[in-house]
Amino acid sequence: MDLTLYWFMFPIGILVATIAMLSGIAGAALFMPFFLLVLPILGNEYELASPVTAIAAALITCTFGFASGFVGYFRKKLIDFDQGWKFLRFSIPLAILGALICPMIDENYIRGLYGALMLVLAWILLKKDIAGSESLTVASAETPNSKTKVSSDGKMYSYFPYSIQKIPTIAGGFLTGLLSTGIGEMVMPQLIKGGKFPVPVAAATSVIVVSLTFLFASGTHIYILINEGGAQAIPWHLVIYTIPGVLIGGQLGPALQGKISRTKMIRGISIVFIVIGIAMGITFIQSFR
View 1 (cartoon, rainbow, N blue to C red):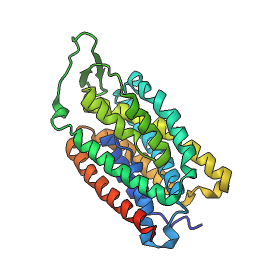
View 2 (cartoon, rainbow, N blue to C red; view 1 turned 60 degrees about the horizontal axis):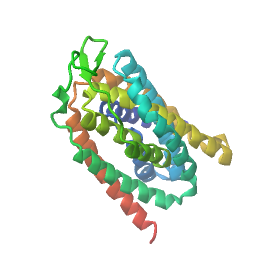
View 3 (cartoon, helix red, strand yellow; view 1 turned 120 degrees about the horizontal axis):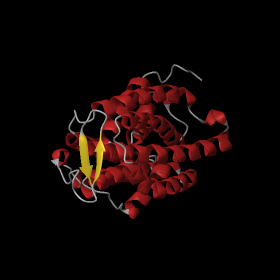
View 4 (cartoon, one colour; view 1 turned 90 degrees about the vertical axis):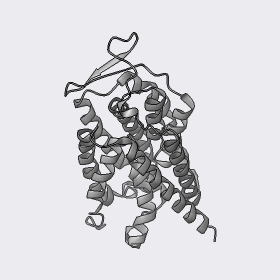
């Protein structure tokens, strides 16, 4: 095992985690296709054992990244824990179920499913465009039944509690365990478009939901891989670089919150998702030739 093989994943990890923290989108949505589409191009020695291994590596990596982001947002006092629990009670059990089912699916079909998921998520993100919501005010501290968050830098954010959509949350949790992404893309649109949450509070609350959902999903995948192939089944020589990278990115994202237009970022990510979806679809079709 060459411990220097994946050195370039350190800066990539910083970049992906920073984007994930700013947007609330799970970084695994970018890591997973990078592992499956880009690494094989670099050479056979870079290719991971299977899509299931790639999913596990993406989840393990992003668990640390979102845990780091959680610390950053916790320090900024922006997380709504009560709202986060409303999502977690559905996302965690379904993430575990998805992770248990994942190894039962043929790896070519995993590629096809992931490609389809990317196209669907791109459509959802574009459909729920939040242009203009970064300055939207829907409540004040004096509004009855409103909640207020005062960040560590003194900014006040007021909003109303939100009753979550159960089906999208359940689907997001299941897809996170099955394909490594989905929950962040389901939570953020709900909070911003449906709940009219201020973007900083929505991003912070999404981070706690995604981090704990990832923790249980990755833990299940680790158990399955080690149970079937021993500790060497985990690509340790890859995650020793991605984990430090996302730990740094997890701190940069909260620090940059509000300084970069989330609307433009979401539109850019949607385009990337479309490209990934098409590329995954092509590899899926080619597998039958």
